[in-house]
Amino acid sequence: MFRETAVEVLREVEATLIPSGAKVKLQPGTQVFVTQALGNSYTVYVNGNLVRVAGKDGDALGLVILEQPDVNEMEGTVEDKVWMQLKTCFDPEIPVNIVDLGLVYACNVIPLGMNEYRVEIVMTLTAPACGMGPVLVAEVEEKTRQINNVKEVKVDLVFDPPWDRDRMSDEAKLQLGLL
Image 1 (spheres, rainbow, N blue to C red):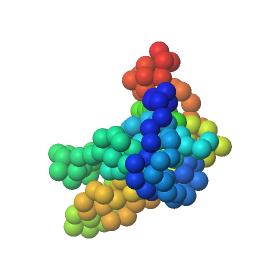
Image 2: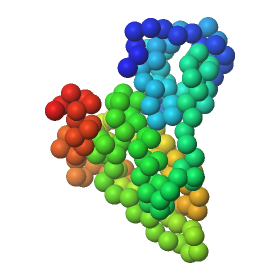
Image 3: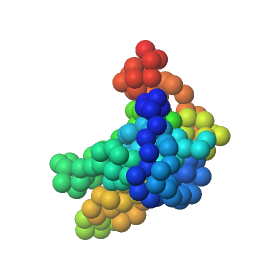
Image 4: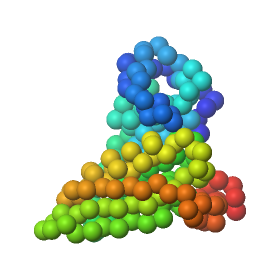
């Protein structure tokens, strides 16, 4: 978490308003507070709002450009690669990925034909009223579609069974001070 020091936006940059998912433009000279740099994006606090800036635009904040390795160059099955991608998805307010938070209930990779797959993911949120649902679902879909030969992606957002802290990995609990 960075919130202590303001940084100045150096060039116009597109950002995603949290939790609505609306696209906005941050203008040069705007003061922002970086709250998180995880999952190949920056979360910044600006004018009473949280927005997400793509890691590739880190230079617009005077920060490093966050590069994400190409999942298609990594070893493993399609399912392994889906799980790798899911571990790069973060709630902008919680510095733990959605897998370690226990938000992903199931991931099924279904063959469609010769080297083509459909991926079905069942996930939840930490609370039914969490406004991050549409943003996280869109990110999960987008990152899953980056995997070669994935032709269809379906993400079901469910609230039964409800999420609770017992679903978190020990690593996540430790990181959040719950162990």
